[in-house]
Image: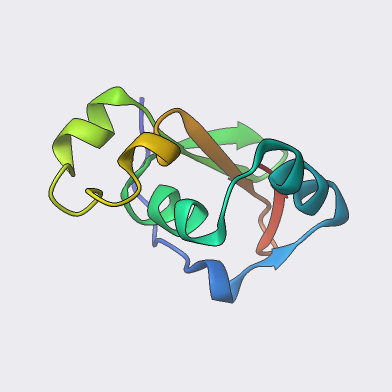
Length: 89
């Protein structure tokens, strides 16, 4: 079940080396990560982390706002630690 939280901006977060490598490997642009953080469903991911996931339902709910990145952002998750670091993408 999704949890409610304040939504961080990608500019407010640090990117770990692991997350940076995964982002490059998967070809995920910063704008896509921003869309996932802004519109994705939010879940507890363990060890104090929060996962933002932009699944099919979230894409449909926010279709107007996601027009430009919907195809690239669909099924992308961004995992953020409690201290504000992106752990993986």
